[in-house]
Image (cartoon, rainbow, N blue to C red; front, side, top):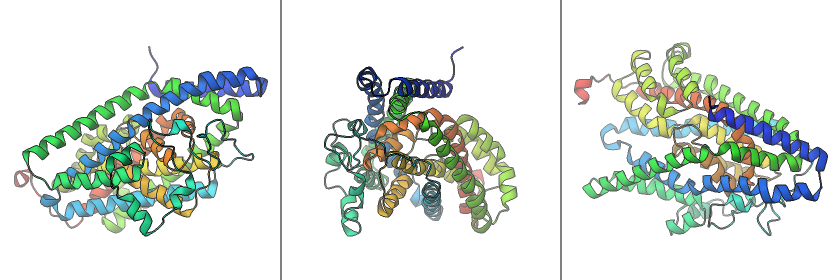
Length: 436
């Protein structure tokens, strides 16, 4: 019987890390090891990363456009506005919580400086990302400090692309996201047959992108083994200790947001007892943990909202359907923690403004992340390239991602149900006959 993919990735992480640590202990500095890393393990890892980066633009663009175009603003009005406001606020709190924990605990901090020369782009002396970290055909990502340039009016101007195709080609993902949001809004405001057909095309692009990501993720065991061998062959087994600290920070952040923020939300904003809320949603939480997919848990979440929480059907159906794609608090927190952890690991300093931008991008990324297992990985890879962090560091994360994906999906689904409680407050119950 063939092992499940997440088991294969865990085995690949341990095998790659173990082989690399052994090579580091026995043959460190040898010409043979340098040749094996440079010509075998590193190229294999880079090819895997490039496959991920290749799908970032089509996935995020189509997901954001479809997410905005799908908002039934005219029909639902206040419900849509409350849902969007709560989603943005909850995601911002989640990412800020995760970023704060990483800054306090510093799980990626190393006692010795990490040499970036083997992976950095040619001429990068300021922590620029590896050539493998850039999207194929794109210019080398900016150093981390570049994100702090033009703060204020200049930053706002830079976020609006004068040429969206150029922004895509250069890997300016912030501009691409803004264009996608504006395009989705325009598509929503254009009720013509041609616009409807265009939306179907964009939905098709999203479907194809998620299918290809699923195919690429199936190659993850090979990529993980190669990336981890490269890392540990150069840096030793201490990488795994830092990985354990990273996992602990993610879990603590998820737990605090789950039982702290959501308890306050449903009590203060939704007028519901937290005990009643968590008792009512426990089936959806278990389903989310088992499937690691917000989309797969949606039918269970809809049933829980109407039968256990007794929420108005017209509110819960809208909030949960939109939230399964757009309200990804756990994913946003995970992405923020991962980016800062890898920044610490590689010695890439991110100032206050850079971290604020990471928070902003993660909030947008939560809207544009596929509600499927491992759907956040392309977003993480994209952010790494933007802030100048070597993208091969994602190999460490892939080995433990399945478990973390199960945990953050549980938070995502709980967050959707908490949003439904908050938005439902003050809304009348509408029967199915009245809705139709």
